[in-house]
Image (cartoon, rainbow, N blue to C red; front, side):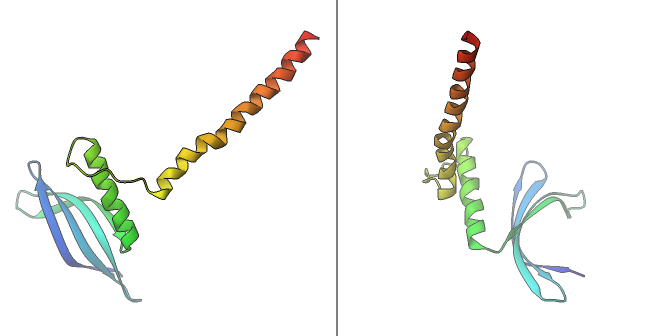
Length: 123
């Protein structure tokens, strides 16, 4: 059986009765412990207790955490929210820009195929 232990948690209230919690947690099993970051959304019940609706876990890897933090800030800045400085695109984001160049020969191939078909019809 897995036992979850909260190492540290921070929360922010928003709306009428909602909150978002960011926590570092530990999953303890017979094999050992595994730490991760959890982002949870919930609300306060009428008795004041917390009720969690949704949760998302992130592996404890700095490159994954950095990716999520950077992109959340960038996406929020796009909607006119918090202003974030313009970041240079990551190498993974540059790859789609190369795809149109690769597609150009594919577009030319059908044009060549159509030309012989037209010649055959005229004869």
